[in-house]
Structure formats: C-alpha cells, structure tokens
Length: 328
Image (spheres, rainbow, N blue to C red):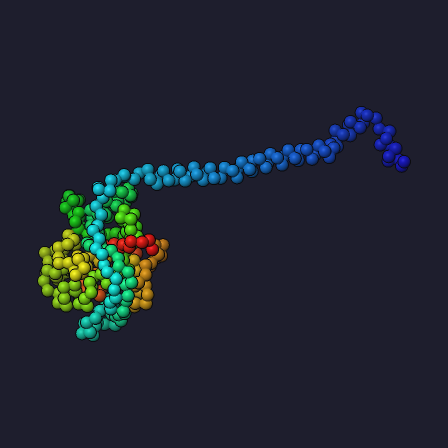
C-alpha cells in the first residue's frame, strides 16, 4: 500500500464525514440533476399539451369578436338581386364597326377592344338582371355589420331620405368590396358568385348581336342614360335601374348609367386576361365596362372598356354579379 492509500485508511470517521460534506458523492449530484431534469421536462410537457387548448381559446375569442356585432337577418328580410340565365355560346369580342374603327386614334383603340378576338363561352351562367342597387347592397352591409359608411351615391344630400335612392345603382364601391359582395351573395343563393370577366360581361351585354348598342347601331333618343342620350337624367346623376328597354337576354342598363366592374385585370389588348379573374390580393388596374351617365354616346357602346385602379371609389362606378351552379 502506498503512502496516499495509508493516509486515507488512517483518517478518522469524523474526518471522513467532513470530507463528505465538502465533497458530495457522485450519487447525490446525479440525484440533484435528475430532479431538475424531471422538473424541466414536466413544465415543457405541460406547455406543449396546452398549445391546442390555448389555440382553441384564441379561436373562440377571435371568432366571437368577429361575429359578435353582426346582425342576424331572416332570409326574407334580405334584398337579393334577380338573376338571369345566360346560355353558353361564342362571339366576336371587341368593336366591329369598321368605319367607327377607322376614326379611332391609335391610343383610343384599346378602349374599344381593337383588335378584337373570337371567344368561346363554354358554360351557361347567371348574371344580375340589373346593376346592384343601394337597397341590395345595404342588405349586405347590415348582414355583415361593417364599420364603414353606407356606400351610396355621393351626390345624395344629407336631408334627402335614403329610401328615395334605394332603386339606384350602388356607387363608390371599390373593386374588392364589389367582389366581397359577390362572394356573400353566393353564400345566400348557394351558388358560386363573383364579378363577371370582361368576356362574360360583353357576351351577356351583346345578347347575340354585333350592334354598337343593345338596340342597334344608332344611339336614338332615350334608349339609355349618358351625357347625350336624351333621357331626363342626362348630365345629372345615375338613374334608377331598369328605366330603359332590356337587351335580348333581359338585362338592363348594360349601356350607360354607371361603369360596371369586371373581375379581369386590365390589359391594353386582349391576350387572355379578359377571360380570367384577378386575385383579390393582386394590386393594379381592373377593366370596367358599359360607360356611365357622365360620358357621351361614344363611350357607352357594347365594346367600350375602361381602366381604373382597383381601389378607386367613384359615383359613376357600380357593378353586377355573375353566378355559377358549381363552385369554381
């Protein structure tokens, strides 16, 4: 036995106890570490198990907040637009009067769909018979309980009763709000609804004809509402919907009154976007169709198209809705 071992063997019990106090055994350290590990593991496990619960609570709270202020409306209390069935078919999209086209400048041609193109509409669809009215849009606003002003025609004076304008086309509605209304309408009617594409809009407006206007090639008098159309509302404001003769599909006011949003992104020439819808989150300009009360007869032709930012709100802008049986 060496000296080191002898010294250790000769230590008294008291000395051994003191050494143990100053230098804890490995087993004690391991026990301490094990306790800490178990404590940390228990806390972590509880945290993990609580995530679904917390998520459920959060969803319940946020869901309650998002619906708490909504007004419950009976279906009979809602004013929903009447829809007209448009058959499938094909047509030539764009201006078709050669003498009119010759008088257009190079910059003007894009606003009349020049050059045009042949388009197939491969399935029937529904479209609203009239432009969406103030009363119909108000039903949507009340049902959703939006914290926004009623988006009515901006020319209405404060002292005028609102119900006087219930049958006027709703105006100052941005593209996204018009799209949101269409989605809501689909939920009420159990259809898949949106704004029409440019192609769908023009196909429905032409109703199988190649004329400049739904009633023929001459503007005539009191056939529509525009700046020089000869109606009692000329140069003043939008007219109540349905005041003029319908086209052959039974649609009203496809020429004049208010520009109508389509779901299509604007392109200077037809290259496919006229048959598609822009995404809701997509910024940029959208195509509007039909002209309005503030424009002259040239700009209410069935071929006319306009370019405006999706966020714009203007008293000359309205919309109508397109619906399908099946979800797209």
